[in-house]
Image (cartoon, rainbow, N blue to C red; front, side, top):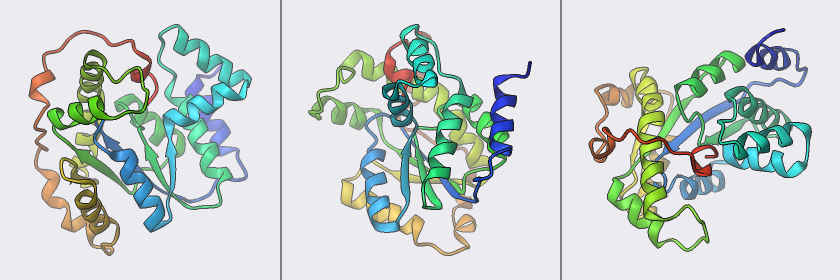
Length: 240
């Protein structure tokens, strides 16, 4: 019997509806404002916004066999396999009439990244990274009124830690390949979107213009959490 990864590959390769699509990964810490900016990008540039977490939650609500499996894994505190999320992303891309996609909250770690490239055989056009200080993200999360049970100081800091340890290596991997577009997300929403627009409106030489980021990226809040060793089992660390 083959692995889940092999099964996902076979399903992807065997699909008659596979299409060429432009994919942009959107990454940033919790409270960095990437969801707000994704909505602006959709409105102004015609992309389709896909949230890995939303797709997983929708699959659970569908009551499908796959959704039940995902739900059980989450209840048991397990991480949903990368291939499961990738298959949901692939299906959403294939069933959508658009050919430009923002994938928000994925890949969450290096294993996600490697599985995505292995299963799909593609890399993102670039990675849009919203860099924001820990202090600013914490303030935003504590101040927002969305009724989210995970917006308290303890779980917020655990989410910071998870992002630091899991997602930053993905950003650094693509940064070494000249694919990271770093946005200063500490500024007001309108100013952040001006920076975002400059990325999306640049011509074909945009990669060359961003090669300056090939030096090691600096993150204003990473040192504060680098020695954290506690494990987080809250649902927000399982679902983006």
